[in-house]
Length: 392
Image 1 (tube, rainbow, N blue to C red):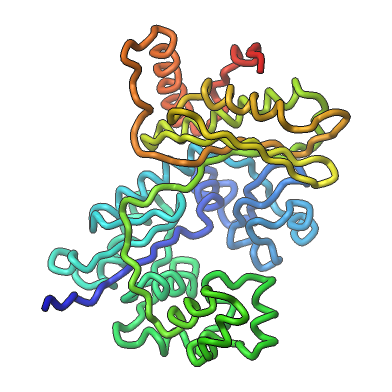
Image 2: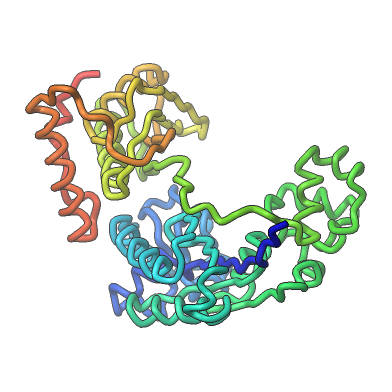
């Protein structure tokens, strides 16, 4: 019988990533309260620097609410290409220490460093080395949690931000988790937490002692899973092959859009951003989704799964136009539009048996546009204006 060596899992999370990149790139923003998001008060906060967080500003908050809490904050428009470039550098550092890296987003990942001990030392030594590399080479900070399982490592990385490092003892996962508030439990948000507290669950330790039948009755199979996690029972492997479930782009507008022509232009910009992310990451996608939010906040989405995976702006945009034709727009004012893709696959779309000159030309244009936008740090540097003449 083979005995599995106890695992050492790291969760590394960049600190206020978008805002930190902006502060690094612009010395005038350092030490200042910075909010990354659209200039429109109708948009949302994508990131908040640690200088603005004491005022209650958090990511995903409406920009109007954020500016009410911190009217002195500096609002910076997002530059996704800069964040993606920094992310690629961060993940290159991760992979110096282990090939077992599971991305969760642009700025966080799980790392299994069990087999790295002989070369780099224990989990804490590896985490410190990664943090030092990120700081020294990229002038950014990261927080890390080290534990025998993914759940505990992810919680640990968030406890002493920014620039934190927390080690969970190999035989002390349950005691580490027990005193933490129920809101720290994975999947327990602002709506679920009050319900759980009414049921008598104030800490993760309370969950660990819960009756499985009661949890199943109140929360279904997720209730049983919460008990296992609360007890430190998490045998999920770090999956280096995990792919993003979706890639998207959207924008909320200061002034409502009226008419199909205005909306088509926004879909082109979104499709271009999505295509560049696919190309830079060597991915393609089978499903295209269009999202429209009206001025009354009602949302309409339409999706289509394509016969073959796609990667270029033209294909995504044409699919988006077809979907837009299925969205009611008569006399409707639109405050937000978006395009996303799912069904993500590694690699480029399959080659045609006899590639036509136009397809090859489009592929080269996409690659050049992606390189230019990456170099200048603005994904809107190159605009596919000629596509605006396309008919749905």
